[in-house]
Length: 311
Image (cartoon, rainbow, N blue to C red):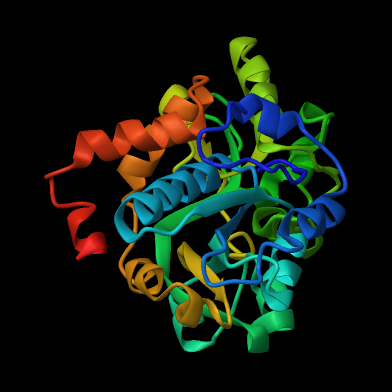
């Protein structure tokens, strides 16, 4: 989950995942410019916000294609950091975000905990949580299986083995908020180093190829879990995760009146973890997100996965 910029990236654009992950810029200004004047009429595009995380790319581009192909709305995918996304949902400059990452199923009842809950609480009166998009998911601090440390509580005793600290992802993510709380709760001497999903995976791969110790912030179903023998460190204080995480479809307050057919779809669109990991793997391998979404939709048609979403 890198620290992304905002990209005017409609379906069919040629921007690759690696370009998205390496981009940086003034997200709020670009988002404002892209949506100004696009919201005057009922025929305007549905602005589908996302952060450039591999799972977000998967669910957003699948959702966008299904909405366009089945409900007749034009969809405008739009990339930004989480803080910008929630502010834009609040002001109506964005319509939909499908990666609102929080613990448990409470968000469907207005009970927000973990992950991006702090963002949600700030704008709760101006948005709606309408359905579950992903999950259940796990997160934690992970090491290669050859590292003999079993628990987060042991890290301080072996801090010299991890001179690079705890390799993290982007600072605005719910995962990093939990990691920061974990560093404080355990009094860890290791620095928590923010970066990106791509940088974290690359660092893990380099260390793994040399059989060197490394500890990273990560979650499942990232494809890296199928590439490497790795495991979470035990977390007796449960600061990284006290219950499973889910991602939720979150909309602007007037979404249902503007896009009623899409609203019904979002209450049912919940992609299975194994299927999402497949799409993420294709994107990691260099496939454009829109192509990965189209390929997956074509492969699962008639298998009872997407049909209930569209009923």
